Image (cartoon, rainbow, N blue to C red; front, side, top):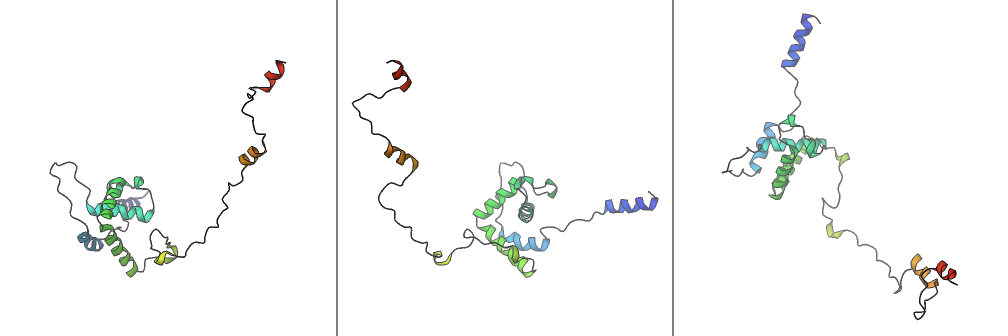
Amino acid sequence: MSGGDLGKLRDVMEDPIMAKPLLTDELWNRIAPLLPPRKPRPKGGRPPVSDRAALTGILFVLRTGCPWEYLPQELGCGCGMTCWRRLRDWHRAGVWEKVWRLLLDELGLADKIDWSKVAIDSCSVRAIFGGRAPARIPRIAARMARNGMLSATLRARPWRWNIPAPTCMIRSERSR
């Protein structure tokens, strides 16, 4: 390598091209007021991961579809379980729905939603008026359904209880 090539390589290493942040400052400033304040920890302990870092981890998992336990540590979001717990707490407090709606509004305004990849099921959208009524189930006559065991039992010879049952046919023939 010539001296000029080393200089270019050094410039690239000192000024790496960073990926676009998942959570911009502008978006964070709109989301931060929606989040509940952190509870004080009088006993001390390990400092919690910041809400911004946790939200960045949540957005990374939701965007990439990777499992929570594979959240890269290089993102600085804590472990995947921490982000999952924060999402759970926000969901229970009713905060996540507000954040989710704000994110959807931002994506909609930026025309970043690909509606061809959207799926809706009855778990996420309420069926108005309960949907169509299911077809009636036809009644079955008041008798047992046929099966292999029942038909074999009906064909078998009924046993007389006053005669002892032979324990083994071969032994009873040998004793004669």
